[in-house]
Length: 446
Ligand code: SUG
Image (cartoon, rainbow, N blue to C red):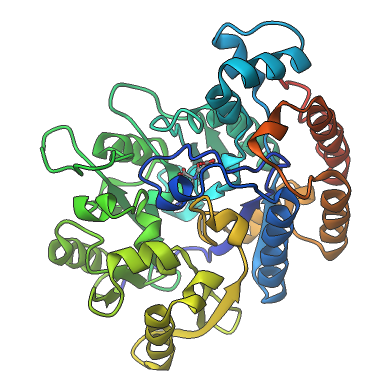
């Protein structure tokens, strides 16, 4: 059996959706984003749906946190493109002359916290500290602007460098990294973690998708593993199946989800599933519980439509596991039938399914798992987290009230040029600094 290490409890940090959540169709290869391009969004519902999920998981006895939204629009995007003037003028001229740039600068895509960083809990790392590597998100122009703000936020949420280290995003040719969406920590009980990295392409191979872009490279996954100080022997790398990417699986977390020793995955998830699963099993000293979902039960297209694999797989306080699914899974006859069999099967520890309405996020290709960053904490690390970013019922109520007062009910693309939205978004964030006890967080706004 693997050696025992200190107990790691998983916390889920969900990002609070921003008031400019909208559907701009900015992510080719993400079917929902392209399909819903130009639709009117509902930012208030989006934020409340996210908060309701956080509350429900906290009530299940899980450790829950939240991350503050990024300020939007990101005026730097407009200034770099040559637009000038005060903020109201910037948005007005950008809306008239380059609406795609205004959409890029206004996106709430930081809300998918699984893409914020990759995380290695302290007992897994060479220096015994918890490490977070901010993702560079270089592939998509509207997402690559997130890294500096994500870094600033994470440094405030995890301020104690003696225990928790936040690293800037990796940089370099060919290093395109999407964070924890392509990473899974597996472990047998309190044994050491195995870090499983999934990439879409590698420089020395022509095997890559034909229709869409592969967002993560092997070189980036390796660089992230180095930054996180994960021992070589505890890293496993696997290539995503290019046909999956071409079916709309732009991140591994759209086709596989793992927790402890369980890896629930679609048969099309990996290019060479047999060798990947064998290597993971060896790394876990024979303890891996692989659950393979065959395409004749759930097709790759149905997996993308329902986001079955973008469920959160969590360990409940009694040691059993639950799957936290989006409502779209219930709407799918194939997925519902599969889930019923999964829960009824004693060969795996999954005993419950919880369903959430996350429609606003789902319409941009983000399910329950996208909305959260998993951070494995020892008891001593928990004390090192900024308390204002850990769930309490009273702070939850203040956040709901805050969203209800500040967030627009509906948002169309043309509304992004409204100076009233700018002012409201700014005032809202000023108030949020107080609620989360993060004074000065937004002082650096561009
Ligand atoms: O990067 N959608 C995000 C969804 C990210 C989901 N995250 C994980 N799978 N972990 C993306 O494609 C759409 C924005 C728009 O079209 O307006 C967007 O960015």
